[in-house]
Image 1 (cartoon, rainbow, N blue to C red):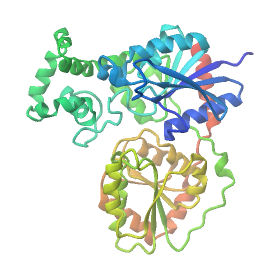
Image 2: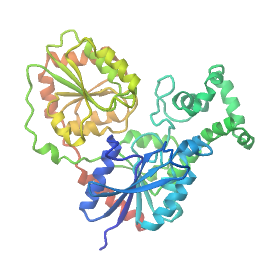
Image 3: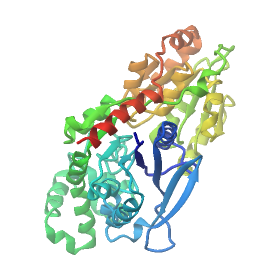
Image 4: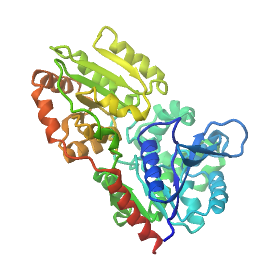
Length: 450
């Protein structure tokens, strides 16, 4: 039987971008290829490309995977707010490109930057589409469900708050900030209701606002047009249903990871001090400031150390503030980025991983990787993080942003290191990527048989 030709579409890809979704897409591609599938990836390489108004596509090969990288400038589109979630120019480009390569099926692992054109283009060609939901972008234009006041959100149910979030979180919104600061939510919602009418297309400002107001309905339509949606967590699945997605469209399939790198690692032994670590983007939403403050408040650290790994360039101002918090404590060190193939080496020198995120998270791959090395985790009691701690019995939870409670928890582990050893023994086996691939193969067969 002929193996299928699968087109994977992701917002960005290796080697320039090395976060969870990119690693998941890479692992998925490699394992499908080992099973005989023909696999190609489309990604965005730059959305601020100033070469021309046209979309440039360049073929590349990364570690044996055919990758088609797109370059474009979203700022040159007629309505950048709408183009962020539906870019008709990219749709036209993808229709032409996909018509040439003729895949059997399209699997979207993230639509940001490429926009929902990643879904509408193959649908125009009559191709089945499967999507893996890897964060909250389909629900929230900012992608994180964290409001402008840094409180957590459940979805776009209050237009005034959505506009404030977009205004304070994007360059496009700078034109509206002074006006919005003067308007309470009830008055702002009344004004936004008027922007839903077609007259709003006559002015560029109300045109942008109207595009934002139309986003939730568009996303509901798009998500319900997909043949099957894979959610790695029940938390995300329930959030999608709450925001209008047909529950029959969604399959919960926890991510599997390639665990071969962890199999040869030597068993961990406790030293005379505990080694804490943070691995991830150095940005406010990931919460390393919470961890550093908690570590600084330890009443008796007993030689404990804290290492932070991750990209510090994307949020350079935040990192400078974080460095200020780290100064004066020689037991805290910033170790920079590391190539993903070094994850086993890094985790082998970690006793407790801390995931202090300020947003829900979906299903952090780094937590799977920690559990694969029998490394317990302290995580924020929210969203996918809490689900993974409970699923794997792999550590402890603390309230979002609670520095004192995190410090208390860390101090207890320092005082009673046997708790770390006991947690290691409790950690349940991590799901292997082969199990997740099997779920996907069954889904591929199902949608192609319709």
